[in-house]
Image (cartoon, rainbow, N blue to C red):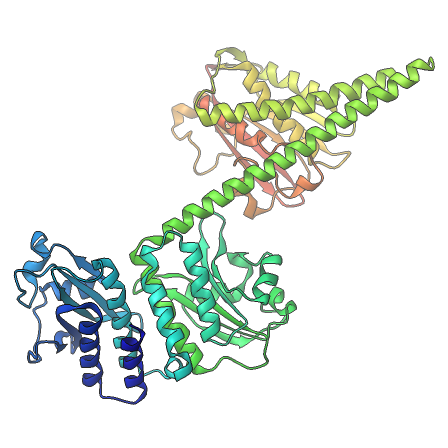
Length: 577
């Protein structure tokens, strides 16, 4: 089988005329797949021409409405089986024998565009399944494109078998159960053919706004790359990858500490980065890296561009990128859950360790007749026990939200009085902060679950205490909605709704929230940049936003880094005064 492919590459290398090479591809397709009739069509001067065939038919123009023209326009491989049962065969330009089992076609692509197709009628009982035959047709179609390009890098004898093996691997993407394993194989083959020390296949993840590794070569340098965490790179943090992906411009340059410091630290001297794309869009990038002080040459660039197009079509046509997106979502979810469990376990352990230690110390002092420590011990025990209980309650609430069993128990509530009580309680939790209450209203009655509203206010006030410096001021305000700053996407939109709505806010002068984190602030497990100095499950804001939504309200945030944060909650009110 390899001989049929190798003979085509050798013919290109020897400088055969294009028509002779195309005819050789036809002959080899017959030998390889036991085909009835095979042929090649190519666009020339905006018309689709029959260029080579196994029945010695003369060259001629095909109708633009033919099935062949439609397949070329689709730009993807097609297998019709059984041929008589599908309407597309009726527009085929070439008559087929009644016993023909099916029709297969693979596109010929040049410089990112589909310029023709290799097609064939199959025998009634072929030696291999039709889809398997299509794989080899795709490789032969790529060799036809190779003849059109006349590149030299992959034609050197020692690289022929590697190059053909790579084309076969890419053509088999749709039939592999694991795209990740296949992508690693492709990366390894790229590394070997390109004489590189590292090959990476990156695609963007909309879930995390990162380039994630779809495939990586199995080399010593690749192991170091994994250890450095370079299998996930923020989109905006790497100018080389971002520029190639956004513009489609190839990046071929010597690496420095400025343009890619992480790879430069590993000793990488030169990189070659090309886009993965089809006719319509870019899907990712391929990176070759070398530890040698020698730039990748034009042959390497042409080779990688050639593969970037083929890989782009293979991924796009089989909708396999969705598999990667789903896998990334699962990874994120698993990472979030693992980090959450580790965080909660750490905080629970700290709380319970403090309770146990304080209790043991108090008991030792009591045995010696010293009661002076008891009051302080009881306060510490109560505080830490409440923290542990809150962590457990957060987990229970999230479970109820996910299962749809989270319920509100509505009653008439005076929001002003409730807020005043919570401010007083919060002040008792921290003597290092000043907590103020301001309201433009004397009373505000609404139908609400009082305990859940109390939970929201407590969470916002404790967060403000947690992330504010000692001596800072925290303010809880209540005001009519028409006097409050509303977000552009607020659910309150009409004048009548504003008249019947109330907004409360909690402001602090703490560290603030970076702008790039604001979009994630109400997601599960979010803890932000202050999480290293503040404990908590990371579920409080997620639960609070859900409580507001179930009350028919909304929650949003405004923040300025190093200047503080304000959380807002809107609620429909029955009566305000």
